[in-house]
Length: 281
Image 1 (spheres, rainbow, N blue to C red):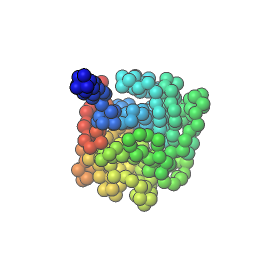
Image 2 (cartoon, rainbow, N blue to C red; image 1 turned 135 degrees about the horizontal axis):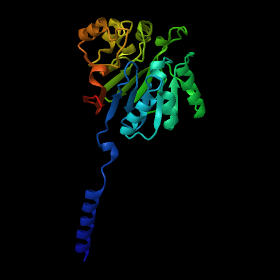
Image 3 (cartoon, rainbow, N blue to C red; image 1 turned 180 degrees about the vertical axis):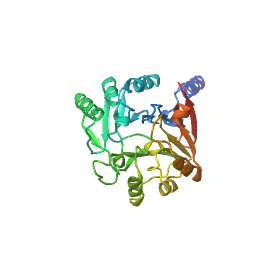
Image 4 (spheres, helix red, strand yellow; image 1 turned 45 degrees about the horizontal axis):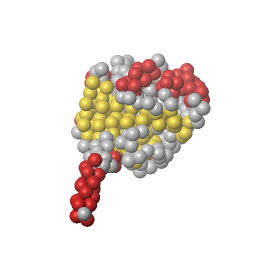
């Protein structure tokens, strides 16, 4: 009888081991960075490996519907963190509509004001949702699982007329893979971040200011050394991205992807491996 009971117990144990679900921590978690094609503007959606949804910028005014449609396609149900890198209309333009459509837990932006209608709409939408903007500046960390995410810029205050250098620059490390989102940061900010010895090395760089010649300076790129450089850009009269900048990326052997050529660009990370895909839809 004891032997029978022992055999039965062994069967139960084996069965339990077979049917027990694998621990979520034992599975491979993927981080996906979506550079949404919003034309001449910026909008980046990040699905963090811990499941959090992060939106960095929201394109131009009136593009909120496009971004909402894209987020819904990715099955986003709420947004843990929204970041407005700076007040320019081609970065904050659609964020007011996103705030109305989604529950947003936290909003980060640099402590600089602007008088454009797009920025006023953004501030009013934040107020309507009874949220308080948290200051985005160097060394502020974001509460996200499985990654180290912190702002590396701005490291100082600039003049109110120098909005691009106020850009909130975000660095994210997921295991061995590193990402840098540069907003519209220009030479002054880039130089100040280097001087402040901020963590800038990155496998993937969201190129500053749509490839303008005033950003992505040689010294900066020599520190960042990106394997992949993504330029969010559309038809424009500024000449973005400039030949100078494209040549600078060649000199550091970066592979450049442009939203005006490839559409939506998605870079997936397992923490050790990066995969790039693009879709014009």
